[in-house]
Image (cartoon, rainbow, N blue to C red; front, side, top):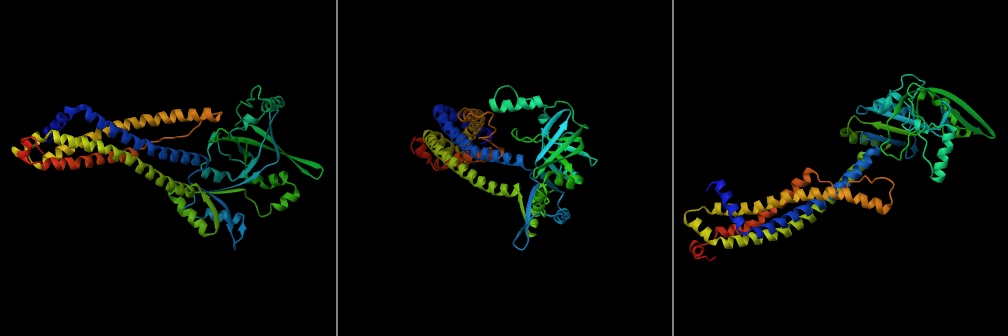
Length: 438
């Protein structure tokens, strides 16, 4: 019997009791859909957490927090920076000095309270420092300003309006400076107090570029990124003499090592640890996180598989009843020389057909439920928590791998459920079958 004839025979037999077949397919659909939706929660939460983490830190970035010298902590020094740069796999080493204090940037009768980040602009460029506008500084007097610098450049009247808005919640926040700041000159005024006296110093810089917008709306970047050429002048202008004495031996606030790609992160991180450096990279954290969620997703798939196994009882009953009802047909096929393996194959095809159809419909339902969950659950949480902004979180995510795993399990269980009835069909006695007996 040709395969096409077998398929016609299977379809004809399934139409004889459509309600029973429909209920069996429905049970398979529900089992497959439950498996996918349940596991999709694990995939969705994993995806959201990884995205959240990677938005704060670059995957190829390693933070160096200091070093261990004779079981004693020491900060990173200049010779360490050169040593880190000499590592073959390292693409860039960014060191920064953060300065806070009474620092004000003035431009066109506007003022903004800022902080200063001293850095090596060439290394920042190698680390792929991104700009929203402008260019990387080419001269010592050129700087980069943070994305929100212009927003915080306010006149005296706008500063009063902003203060009133924060205190009373009335009115609107002033927009700040809305013009083009590229190639404009700003004056940085630094004030420090020593005893009862206040000393001020002024520096003039040209704005070469504006940094990219931070990944989160609540983060404001009004920093001034200035080259190390002004390090001594800036540090002495910001800190009193007693603070400068305490800062000896602590030149850098942040040190970052960058790898060319994610593949080199582990090797560089291990090498730095062997040399006594205290390092942290998001890859280390992601490794443990991935292990946890792999176990969680495997557990959810296992629980979902139990549901599919329960649905397989319906397939077993349906196929057993089909064998009973078609006893005479089976006897006739065997009497005219039908191969028992072909008879068994037709019943397995019928159970596989139920599994395939149920899986296809189950996948469609799963995507619909996943889309609905990602749409409705954030709205409910916003209402319950009284959130001021939209909640960006993926509660359900269905990758192709999950679909393939779930469909394979559903179809495999369906075929196994039909195996016993199929074997029973091939063992039917011809004479008993022609008398409609088993």
